[in-house]
Length: 248
Image (tube, rainbow, N blue to C red; front, top):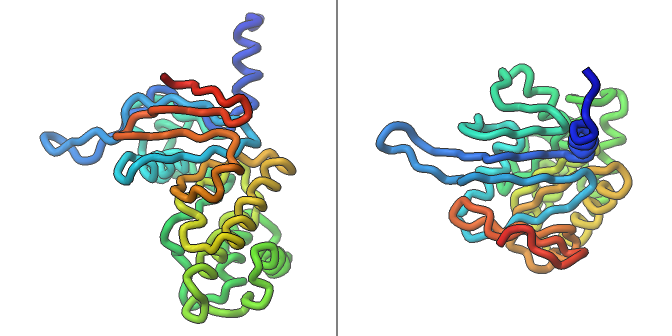
């Protein structure tokens, strides 16, 4: 059967998307205690775009990130990551998808017994030649201003330095998608700018897609889009290049 022009165009568009969400709903709890926290979310996130997700605390931003990263099971709707529908996949099938995603969480989640370099190397071991892991880790830490801290353990680092190690760990493999939850919250203005500049470089060089939850007004200018989530619903989706809103 020959595909129609419409079908061919749909396939072409899908190839340009890092993430495609259709009518996503999510709940916490079961039975009488079940509470819906995300309502009918539909979004297309193209490759190579930086998208900032804003909204008040408790609006579902972090929950949405964990769903996109295949860390939670979606209850209703469709979620395609890098062209693959992940709803219904067994956990084993999700592993290679997660390897293409860099996660930056609010908690540093560093291994206290490992040095900064060794913490970053744990990511390299998942996808790259382990023979080059030390150099890759040192190079990435250097890009984040930690050249003189590569052999320090977390207890000898400041909060901002720990956050930069966590960011380096998420970015060292140049993932196709970066999901970041308040990545600059613990950083001063200069360090925060270094982080988002590096993310922008990845977007332009490798087509990396970045979805970043933040309340940091200092970095809003780096975004291609700003999406506002309120009470689990998409309230607005603004393209900063055209200054148009996709959601009324």
